[in-house]
Figure 1 (cartoon, rainbow, N blue to C red):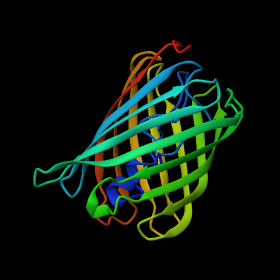
Figure 2 (cartoon, rainbow, N blue to C red):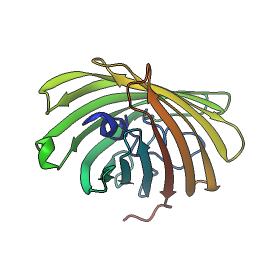
Figure 3 (cartoon, one colour):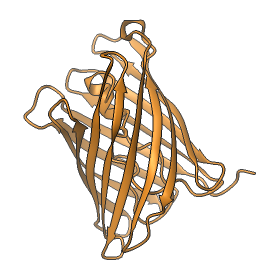
Length: 240
């Protein structure tokens, strides 16, 4: 909300980016911010990476590896490097997140889970504080997974402002072909205008290698426009 983006305006949208998800026919993995009721396959891992160009000229480069060691606990540890419009480059985010399922998403059914995480901006100018968040992802499958709806509702503690607020997201995935999907979503917090994002994802290698691209902005403008290009890699089960 993501992940998802929630540290400084451009960074907040990225942090809620869904950091996880498994290798099945439909899930809210990259490039969606709204998370879903799936985890990476048991004993397997994935890496989600993407580059994001913001309206202010900054570029973000993200990498978020995630593994499922136990079968129902997905752990993600990742971060970002930001290149300012003036050329300076620095680490700008460190993310740690855990996700478990109460009910896995099934075809033509529904699922629900729990996500808890923290994100830290290590820059001295940001005060090196941590934001904490937790939310419940729910997913609903229709027409044999050809259309999947995801909803998120939760809480976030912003250490910079010492404020807590509601965070939410609503997103959808529509199968276009056997390998391609259209994604649309809106997400935000209770104290500001929501964002939206639209894009497509495509399996280069089914259930193993996926690419995507998106366009996003804040409703009503406000200088938060961005574009992103991503790559997602999923492994078979290999962990002990």
